[in-house]
Length: 520
Ligand SMILES: Cc1cc2nc3c(=O)[nH]c(=O)nc-3n(C[C@H](O)[C@H](O)[C@H](O)COP(=O)(O)O)c2cc1C
Figure 1 (tube, rainbow, N blue to C red):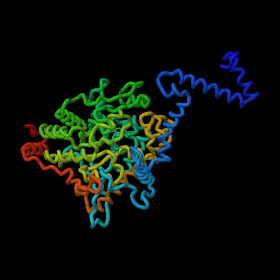
Figure 2 (cartoon, rainbow, N blue to C red):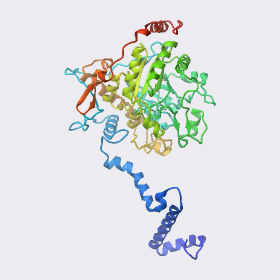
Figure 3 (cartoon, rainbow, N blue to C red):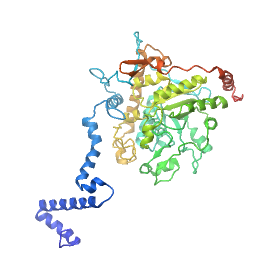
Figure 4 (spheres, helix red, strand yellow):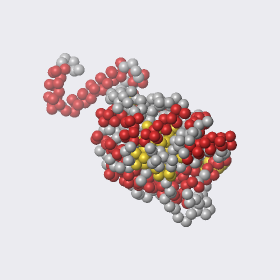
């Protein structure tokens, strides 16, 4: 405050002073505001740097906030950025826009770096490549589904905005692949464009729950009967936050989302860490049977692998109860999310490739591989990476962030704030205006097509006619500098267990005649 005059007088005096001497007055105001801010910093008790260096410390925070975007545009190497390096993002963007996605002058990767994964091509590649055949899932259910080799992985309406969901579903309709709803239930935007849906039931059963959060069979049945819903996916966990339910920050809960999910607004919606309907693997099987019975559609389960003994537990339960899922979606710990605690993202779970191989081995061991398909997710962004995933043991793959990038996401890392600048992971109307579903839907479909085309080229380069011919022997891993091993040597294929032959026969009898008992 200027000494000698009151606040009211200052208000009246300001316009006069501005007219008389604008430069001096603005300068004086600036100094006054800066002094007040410095005083606030000096007196506050939370932040030592601001307390010790009032005002000046603000520069540090401004610069560190600007650091991430500045590094991304100006300084970061194309191969270094995380979670998705620029050269992959550029490939996705070019493919989505039907532009040239080739690269000049050779690889920029250090191919001999330990951990690198490469594929072994044939000296006699196929002369041409064709679109790979689809995978028939749930052959023993009333409504089997032919799954494309590359699909949209689970992302809810909630984590993504309305226009993003519309775009992804429009892409699925145009490209003939599935769009997984994520755990937020089925919204009108999942339905309008007409693309195939996998309805995901997470631990909170959004879209099929009672007010207390328990499963509502009648509600589920009525919604699952929608013709666009092709399969049901029961989610145990996802790679970015295993052992933790989904998180939707309160900033992203609109009235519409609250209604679709049947939840209250005003606080974060956190799904329980596990399903309340069962306590063990056999309980899970009974739930799978219930959901399959109610929907008549193939039912899969999705998890990120923690302790491999879990695979024994579920396989034993499948054999004992005679109930098994049509597919297992194996999500790698490298998977993405809208929002997750750092420790869960960085610390828990198996990466995708290892988890797929362990899962396939267990299914082989228990004689279940022919009955249960495997979907892989976790940084499967290109056709080449799809080939690696399928050679490791998956039947098809799904990607979340790949499709986000195809519809305009720029990896701004704001999915958890509702300020996604591209308008993909936000409900802000103004920002969502950027995502035009008619245009971005086509981009998503182009991207999926490019992945499939690149996959088919790799398949031909490996001298194969069918994706099922790919094996771990086609992958090699650099285990140390100048030491390369075939994956089939590092993780050998399991053998079928002899001692389970009798149980397997009973299971086969049950599959042939659903009324026959399978359990011991
Ligand atoms: C914004 C966002 C939201 C997601 N929401 C879900 C979800 O609702 N349910 C789920 O099982 N996984 C969810 N995921 C995980 C993905 O479905 C996928 O399993 C994981 O990101 C790995 O695929 P990616 O590496 O291709 O992104 C989400 C991922 C992202 C990026």
